[in-house]
Amino acid sequence: MTSPKFYQLSKSERLARLVEANQLSEKDAQFLAQSQPLADELADSMIENYIGQYHLPLGIVQDVMVAGKVYQVPMAIEEPSVIAAANNAAKMMRLNGGVTIESGQRVMFGEVVLTDLPQLADAVKWVDNHFAILQTVAQKAHPSIVKRGGGLQKITTTIVENRFLKLNLEIDTKAAMGANIVNTICEAIAHAVQATLGGTILLSVLTNAAFGSVVKASVTLNPETLATATLTGDAVAQRLIDATQFAQLDVARAATHNKGIMNGIDAVIMATGNDWRAIEAGAHSYAARTGHYQPLTDWSWTSDHQLRGQIAVPLPVGIVGGSIGILPTVQVAQRLMVIETAEELAGVIAAIGLGQNLAALKALVSDGIQKGHMALQAKSLAIAVGATASELTTLLPQLLKAPHLNTETATTLLSQIRAENR
Ligand code: NDP
Image (tube, rainbow, N blue to C red; front, top):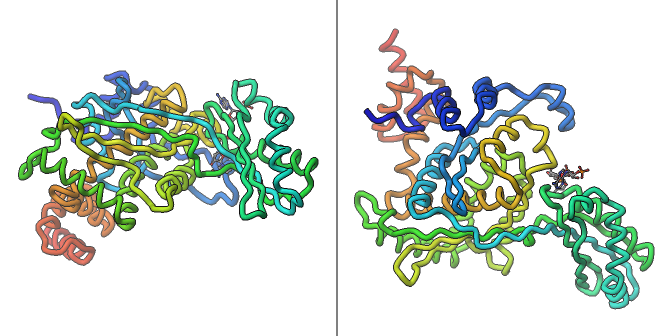
């Protein structure tokens, strides 16, 4: 008899299987089994006006192969079907050799903007000629990042509308996302520049257009991997390419295309304690960088008739800093992933985004998105109208057969089941 699949197990059986496979320690499994809330004292110290906690399910994408290494990837998400799709894609990609990281830059940008400078061109020259002085200012502002081998690397200047002087600071924040590090350095540089050149400091802050942290990753698939009961792999692959080309031409579609990618990316960002607002802002500003909002992935045929998918997305993630060292679940998630550097984490997240896009496009251009979603939507609906775990077994098959999958149907069917069981 074959052993049940991971998704067919109960939560405690899944945890036991992860422990058995040495992917999770006994202690971390016990922690997840208990689903303890944060200690009030800790939560109260993290935010202002703390009044309670908000919980999300934590799931796992198994065996994601990136640059030859296999990862167990945690996802924190409320949307049904995202994790199932990610697992499906991870399997397709692994069967084809996994995801390759093509490039992964990692530098954060900060903006310092001054106004009221009488001689903008002279100001530009001064900044361009005095980098060494400004670098010393940055080192003094944040000495610990310099000790770690990071800090201010470069400053470029732009005059905007003959009114604003913008300094773009390139800062290596090492293993941290670095918003606070960048902001500290930006403010120190702003004051130093103003002290010499005059003018008014308008703002000095990190930019979330994190184009210095773009990860490019790709996967090459034998089209046969994509075959469905009704379509050949070639046909699915061609439709997938056509759907991507349509997204390149149609902003309405590009937005949805990218939302699907962010389903995967955000869920891992959340599970690893990173800042999903920063990641969202970066991804969409990158998608719009040419002035025409574009999909973050591209799919095409290779010369030997394989399907090649590529993703390029800014992923300024950290493995230290912010809430990462504070949240116990994030620590477990990090240990589960076995991640050593922020670059490595960014690569895995890019692979997840690419896979999520593959699974979504495959469903969309073959069976349609609703087929796979129906069972999960029915379950959410049944729970929302108050069905218990034992009632779900009877209610779900009836709901899926009903002509209209909606609250009214779910409520009526549930009342009938309860009446019959009385
Ligand atoms: P922190 O302010 O926590 O800074 C990271 C700290 O981690 C460093 O100062 C450093 O302190 C320590 N550290 C330990 N090991 C390393 C290492 N190997 N490499 C680098 N640093 C290390 O976090 P960030 O600066 O990363 O800022 C992220 C937070 O800022 C997030 O919570 C984000 O939500 C928030 N934020 C985001 C903004 C945005 O996106 N626009 C704006 C403002 C805040 P030490 O060297 O002293 O040990």
